[in-house]
Image (cartoon, rainbow, N blue to C red; front, side):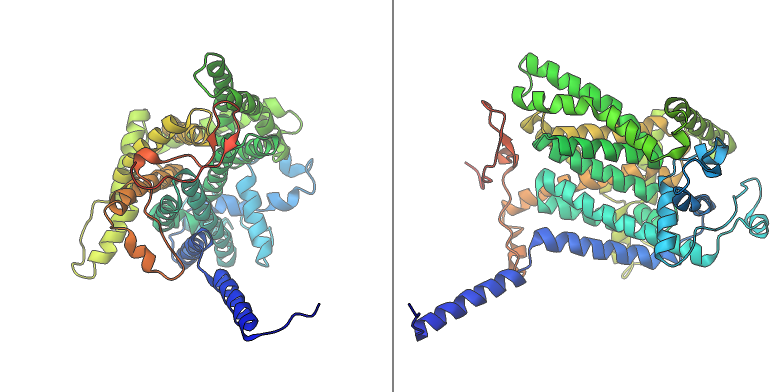
Length: 478
């Protein structure tokens, strides 16, 4: 049968095509916001690559860029038992090598920096990297930092929605400590990228327990250990958490079906993480356990030597560490403080502003605690919270010297909590109509957020079966 074309059919066809075009062109916050955050972060980071002050530690990572190409000979001289090989895990060096090769450089770089001498002596000795190598290594780090910003968006978005995600990602993107380290050739940005990916995977595993997510979580913990050691240690308390879930399920204090699914997957994490750590680090292959112990001993010895060499920044105990963190992230590295100073500087140059990063992060702690209580100990929110607290705790307990780069994982935690605190304020404003201005932006319609007492987990658990049930968000007060 041949369709008869009429003015009505043509009008209907045109309407369908127009609606499809609008759908394609519509700005979707789930895509637009992380894209804009990436563009913002990569632009800021790249703008600082050529201007950020040089630090001698950058030479160590560029010097070891050949680790990446030396993976072709995992039993070669590079991986023999020597101080430089066991002094730092190799993943940051792999990143430097890959970044140099992708930008047309090679992995034959500078010599080893001798910290007993100054920059001029080291430059004469060949320990100063070429400017092209330095900037290439910094650029790859700038990209890693921008990707970390996007992952932070997805973490906070998974916890409390796109407003929390946008606030968390924006704070990290403009955070002065994040920018500084993202424009240097160090391994710390790689660490927080792996930590943030670990947190995001933990949310997915908790919400939908499965072997694939469990394997990915263990691999990320192992790779994190191959970058900076501490994430590897998190796999041990994670296994204890899994045992605890099984015990709580037995006495009726945790969702039985969920805990029985999640518990064994968490117990397996140390094994997965350690295997990944060893595979990524050829130095360990001849004696995985013995040489891993040597790596941790060497790192602990380095921290003690640093504390003795720089008594002015030595940290006596965890309370001292908390005080240093507060001072650093309030007065020296405050994203909101710097932003306010930049704005007020147009009117009153030299204005000093106290930032509210930690204030909103403190609000975020309360929000996160409420979410954990509401969603349960066998939820993705609780699992992510446990890992995030563990990473922050490892930094606080293990910090022996107040070096600026050691604070970056704490800045990551602050950004996520800042997003949650911002979401609570957003809800308060939205309930009074303060957030409706966003509905004026073409293609973006922001519904009034739910009241705090009505936030539902997107993957609510059926109490009888333990299965995930997608429930629509409840809006307004009831």
